[in-house]
Length: 490
Image (cartoon, rainbow, N blue to C red; front, top):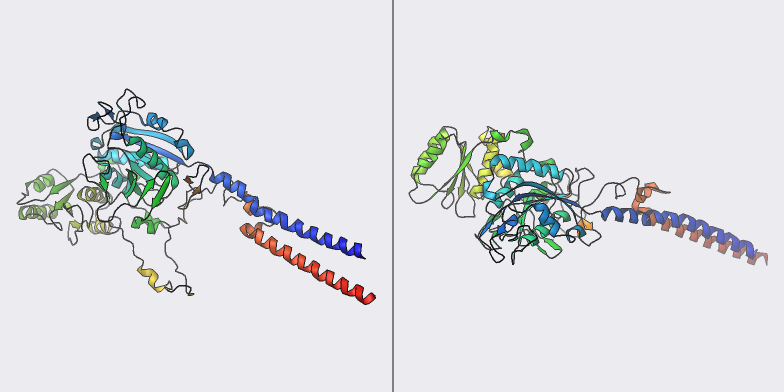
């Protein structure tokens, strides 16, 4: 009897282990496949337009005498290997190679299409350009790129080298190599997914809408007045501590702007100009622009947008003739409100950025009220959590209805191949985009959703453990019963 009981118990334990071990393996077996997918390096495309970053200096110790847009981007990327390959798969599109101020609005149109084409396959794009009008490049892309993947713009305040090639006679103290490497690192990390376009220079991350160049020669020239930077990079560590309000619409199509450039002819983009306000300014410039066929004019006024009486009279006449105006301040920060008729208040947009939004508005609508709405929404995005006040319980630990219909920061409507906002470390320790492809967490062929218990998914281990404990308990009950029976027989 004793041998029989022992044999029975052993059989029950074998059955328990036979159920538990394979079931637990559903979870453990999924790890290598997921890890392999996550270890794939993100693809980053560098779309190069030239600027100081690609500049050739007169000497190794020369920072201000150079020819912008000289070296090909591929040569510069090659000089950053093998370090780049440790965290990203990098390719290059040489869109152009000249100073930033030499580009036209039709070329801006082409740049947007080039970035969108790159994002169709890549996980992120880095755009390099000169710093003189970099903030305008950045804001244009922010308004027009119809993709939520990261777009990072960068450049340099000091030229790359002084030799015949990018690899010869490197400029002492140049900031170009570090800015290029760190921008690629930022784009690869996916930490600015749904941020729109951001600017990264001097290890600081800025929102395209808010940043401006504040010094003609210093490396720390780019600043976001009043609000400050979004974050920064310390070596390979990336810290993002605030976000553009646009992120609040990430999970919906409301994130996208109406400015789809593949639907308009670049030659048809309207001409827009800027008028500067100052003491006793004349109105002739406004009249001349209107007579020249300019469709939109931005006034950079004093204080909260004030212009002289002569400028005011000229603006009224031009507005009555159909010209649209955007009112801004020359102070560099602060809001301009109000506006009526063909005059639109641009809030706190800088004049050079209000011009781009005015241009795009004129290209996509003939209704000034619709354009005014775009200035208030896409032009001035703002966080607003007031709707949560009636649906979220404010007290810790209290139960209450969950908010419904509110957008989240996670892109729920994106295709599975899109990167997520929360990347996981790759093989080098640098964050990489989430993958929903073969072998990834959502792939039905991976171990997480296949095997003996497909319905259990990631909870298979817990269910297997419970089954094991139940079988052990049954074995214990059987032992007690047989022992009691043996005692009665004696």
